[in-house]
Length: 170
Length: 236
Image (cartoon, rainbow over all chains, first blue to last red; front, top):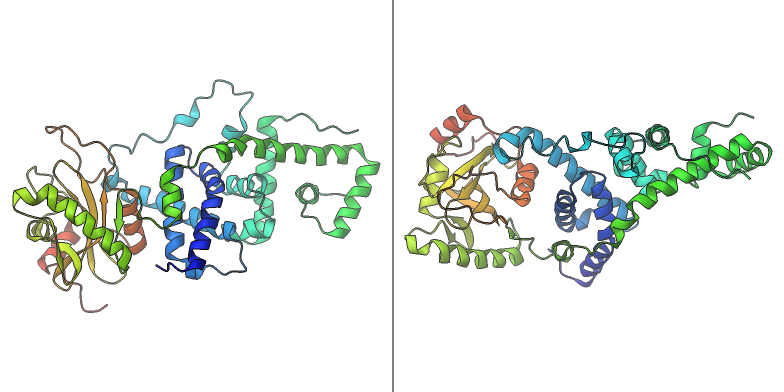
């Protein structure tokens, strides 16, 4: 691994982005500890692949993409390797979302967690992380039209779940 | 006027082009219903943003800062080709030797500057099937697979008071250690049976995911590979 000044500089930029990476990871996995594990894996991968980052690309989008792909790998490996790697945990990490005492007034977090994954990620990248549509589409590796339709559907579902008051129309 | 919800959404997100923006702003002036829909989009945006704002204020765990600065990850030594981590590995080696040396059988030794499985561990990697959970072995093996390089690789967990897990690949007649991680969990009580690989670290799993070619070997696959002494078929 390169230890020249520029690599160190990027490392410090990554440090600055850690809070946002953690926030995005919370939209991928519910447990904060697991989310941080995902961030750690993503950051380690990013450092190994610094040469693949194009200077004119946004570092945050690039890291979000690595994080998302690490998560996909993780989900896949959980499915495929579950019997080998985590026999005890297998039944543990699903199901805690289903008991909501206040079905009528969901928190934003749990409403978001109920969205289908593709909509959740679109909402998270655009509304929470504030990415432009084209950057969010790039992170998710989909055409921009796909992103906007996921975003629109996600928003609609959230509106329905959250019953936000009508905005001030005056 | 026909203004689609996607247009309003894009407007609320600051993504509308100039023409659309002009159109929508005119529509908003004329039509309270359009104003209301834009306001709803903005309110939702704010609500979602606000819900996760507190994550940004949490202190970032030190292990993440260290990882971003390129430190060897928490209890994890990644090997592969890099000198700096190889040095860290030799520190781990020292630890491992400290723990295991008294048994007279170091699980890890260096060979030509590379970390490889010592005799006991190599024997376990070469002969034990992953279904073998008999207590008393130096290590249990977890997952066997073909790497993209064509080599056979296996994950393992060293048994003992400190649970180390790792990934080894069969290269040039040795089991080369690719990743070695010390499991963060407290060691189990002496009598407790611990499923060998349940404690495999995220680093080991990540390394498997990164290098695996296709699916892991099943038992028949392991037996077949064992018969060939885990040497990669020449086709690759």
